[in-house]
Image (cartoon, rainbow, N blue to C red):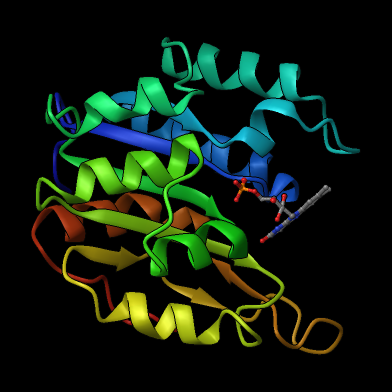
Length: 193
Ligand SMILES: Cc1cc2nc3c(=O)[nH]c(=O)nc-3n(C[C@H](O)[C@H](O)[C@H](O)COP(=O)(O)O)c2cc1C
């Protein structure tokens, strides 16, 4: 296994609130591998209280695990480009909303701004999907981003084909091997699980 010691990882949360516990467990694993992690959150994550927890509870947890304040404004995300802040940027979970924006060059949240700033440096961006419209209106955006330079996916599949037949969800416990592959310029295979 690759040593993540001193690898600078941007780790961005978007508003798929039901996945946060799972994703934070993976974030904890990354910290034990010695990675230097900077958290970024979207406006939704910064402001929406849900049945899964309040915005403040999640922010406090993310900051406790990473030991850093969250980047929560576009102004604070902008220097990610000029300062070459990250070796890799992970968006986990990545909502359909954020995915659609990325595929269309929109950067109106701290997370989409972070992606734009990071990609300008030609460095890997790794997306961990969690969206009910993955096989619906967002299917074309997934297909588009699969073919974009420096964009990689955490392997994903249908999480509930019977009740939510358009829903796609990353296998979050594959974030670590997907990071290692993306740092080597490779898409972890197989993509579909
Ligand atoms: C309780 C709750 C759960 C949600 N879960 C998801 C989800 O799993 N996937 C998704 O794409 N959007 C989900 N959404 C909708 C997003 O939060 C919404 O599209 C938001 O605009 C996303 O903004 P962001 O991508 O900037 O975080 C959920 C919203 C709420 C209130």
